[in-house]
Length: 185
Length: 359
Picture: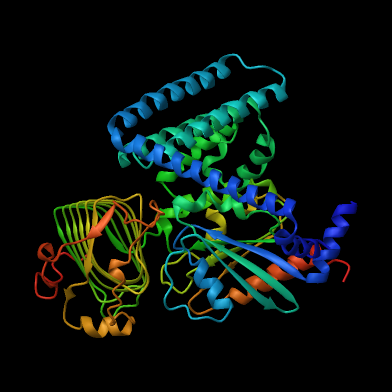
C-alpha cells in the first residue's frame, strides 16, 4: 500500500496520463492523434514504429503513444504496456472482412495483466464512410458485453476526418482515469 | 551530488596519474569489445554468405528436429499429465519456452532463408503455439465457467458449444467463415472468373468498395471512392480512380494494379505490378516480387476527380516503398522499381466496354 500511495502522489503532482493507442493497421490511429492535437491530417504514412504526442487536455497532460498496427509489428505492442492508464482501441468500422481479426487482437490485448487496470476506450472510427457499421454493431461483433466486469470501458463512434466523436471519447477516458487516479482531488 | 563527482573526475583525469591509467585501460577495453563485435559479425556474415544453401538446409533439419520434439512433448502431456496444477504449469511453461527458442531460431536465420521457408516456419511455430494453447486450456480449465455464463447470453448461435475452451476456439474459427454481418455486404465485386467488371461511381454517394476472390478478371472503377479493400486476387488487372481514404490489399498474385490513393497498404502480394499515385509512402508486408511505377490511368474527367481528391499532384511517393518485413537500410529484395521499358502506356478505361458488366 505504501508504494501505491507514493505512486499516486507523484502522479497527482504531475497530472500526467499515459495513453496507448492500438488497433489493426489502417484503422486510423495516427489520424486520430493528429486530429485531436490539431495538426494536418492530409498526408499520413502507415506508422513504422510509433509516435508520441504530448497534449494538454483540460488540466491534464496526456502522453499519447500511437503504435503501428501492421501485422509484423503487432508483437511489439507489449513493449508499450507498462504504466498505461488508458487504452484506446481503434476499429475501422468499414473493414467488415477483418472484424474477426480485430476481435481476436483485442481479446489478446485484454488478457495482458499489465493492462488490467487501464480504462478502455473503443473508437469505432470511419463513421463518415457510407456502409460503416455503427458503434452498437461493432460492440456486438467485438462481444464487448462479455468483457471482464471490472474493466471500465466505453465505445464511441467517431470520424478522424471530421473529428466527430473524438472529444466525447477522450472526455470520457480522461474523466474515467482521473476518477481512478486522482480520487483525492 | 553525482554530477559534481563526475565533473571532478573528468577534471582530475589529466592530472591524477592513477586515474589517467584507469581512463586508458577503459578505452582499451572498449576498443577490444568493439573489435570482437566486428569479428563476430564478420564471421557470422561470411559463414552465411559462403554456404547459404547448406546453412538453409542445416536450419531446416534443426528446425524440424526441434519441432518434432515439441510436438512429441505436447502429445505426451495430453496423454499423461501431472495432476498437480503448478507442475502442469511449469511443464507448459517449458514447452512454451522451447517454442520461443524455435521462433528465435527462425528470426535469426530469416536473413538467409528464402521467404517461403521463413513463412512456412513461422506458420509452423504459430501452429505449435496454437496447439499449446489448446493443451493448456484443456489442462488448466481456468475461466471456463465465467465465460460460459456470459457468452451464452450474448450469442445464441454458438450457445451449445461453449463448454470447453477448446471447443470455443473451434467455434470461433468456424464462425470466421460466416461472420455475423454477412447480411450487410459492402458493395463490391466478388467471386468472379475471367470477366470484365466495371463500376462507375460518378454521381453516386461515395462509400467503400470491395474487390475480392477474383481470378483472371479486369476491374475498372471510374470515379472516386472513400476506401477500397482488395482481397484474394489472381491474374487480375485492376484500374481504379482516386481513392480518397486508403487502399488495403491482401493476397494478390500475378496482378496489375493502377490506383491513386492517400494511403496504400499491400499485404501478401506476389509478382504484382503497381502503378501508383500516393500522398503518403506505400507499404508492403509479407510480399515479394512486387514492382512499382507511376500512375497512368485516364478516363473522362479523371483530372477533375484527382483534383477533388487532392491527388492531382505527383509526389513521387510511388517509389518510396516501406517494407515492414525489411527494416534495414539496404534496399529490400522484395520490391523494385518497374523498368521504364516494361511499363504499360497510359491505360484508358473510359472507352473500352463501359458498363457492360456492372455488378
